[in-house]
Length: 246
Image (cartoon, rainbow, N blue to C red):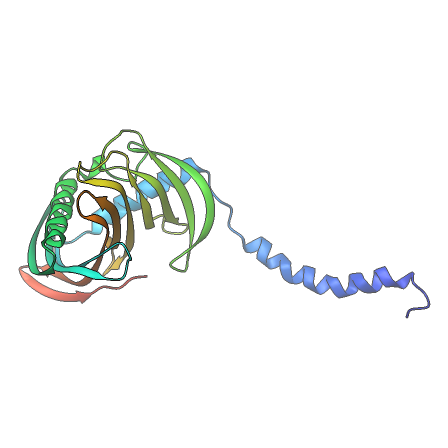
């Protein structure tokens, strides 16, 4: 025990001082969070920059349909999607196995995708289509992201009520999740979807998705999609480029 208790606070402060000093650089290095309007403006600029570097490509995409338990595979579909900037997209179903509903669901998803790309301005994650609200900051795919709530300005099945994860450095989307603002069809209820994005040879693209819904007369299902291999089209030649996700 210390005989002179008056030195105790001073001794304790000496012990804590190094810890306080260690913490100072962390506070100094912390980047301030922009306001929501600034984030949305930078998202718009990042999207425009990405549109400018898009090139023609084909992608091999795998779809897997699972049942209510999320484990048992009910169907598997492989499709090839071709994109020509700025707004031409087409697809071919290459292989299909399992329940026929799986292929029908994939065809409908791809038909919607090819229709949306022709009028992408109406579905972009922009102030014209959505209201945004800052929720928090967190890591996504190992990157610092701003998480924003999104509310559609119109009740349309191509717009989502949900959240987006925006890269705090590039202002590109890492993740989108939500439910359609309007039911996609009489056959589907309680629909929800998650989109994942990644880098493909300098282009920022949607590279995976997970869709869930209750289908009348069929039951609950989850459809997973994953892009497997990209082929960039250069001057009439094809150069294989494997997916690189940052």
